[in-house]
Amino acid sequence: NAGVTQTPKFQVLKTGQSMTLQCAQDMNHNSMYWYRQDPGMGLRLIYYSASEGTTDKGEVPNGYNVSRLNKREFSLRLESAAPSQTSVYFCASSALGTDTQYFGPGTRLTVL
Amino acid sequence: SQQGEEDPQALSIQEGENATMNCSYKTSINNLQWYRQNSGRGLVHLILIRSNEREKHSGRLRVTLDTSKKSSSLLITASRAADTASYFCATDWRTSGTYKYIFGTGTRLKVLA
Image (tube, rainbow over all chains, first blue to last red; front, top):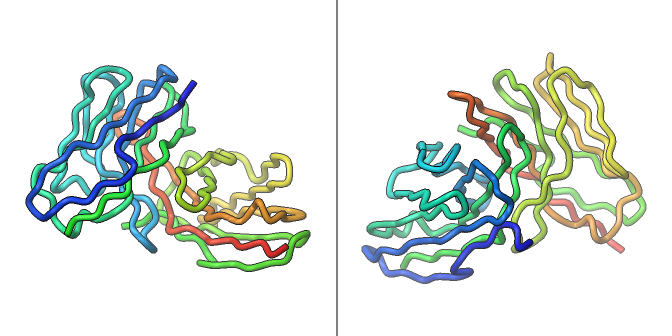
């Protein structure tokens, strides 16, 4: 089992460009999450999906969109990247009715 | 706003010593978790303690929870160089039956060999 995988590992964008961060899990988990981690700020929840077909906003959703493509995959899209979105992005998943989250290795995004 | 705040922000100890880090939170919780993050990696779940529990052990880890003070502590006994990492507490935030968590800012632990 690969667990939670994320692509790409690194990305550099120019202001105004768009891109999609991909996340997939092979643990048959119902819930999936996108976080961003900035220095000294801990992790902040961007969006989450409690189950296939549903998505909801987290703490910092502005500037992002998500798609729960199927039970395995949950993507995060930046339509028009801004320097303030420079961060490390983590995807996580959890099984139905449980609290433990499993994290991917992260995507380091720099917006110039 | 952050629900959990860890202190200290950074901690440096010698191998074999114990490391204690604390987490304070603001609102009522159902449970609290601790995670570890090695440099450049994703977070790894360490332990979960429920609001009706006061103490929990897992190997060299001991977690306490004081709901009256809205605080938790993580003790790592007989620390090793491999324990060098950042440690985060996460408190639950539940709406519409969905499990969501708010993470603190973390404690950076350095264990010197």
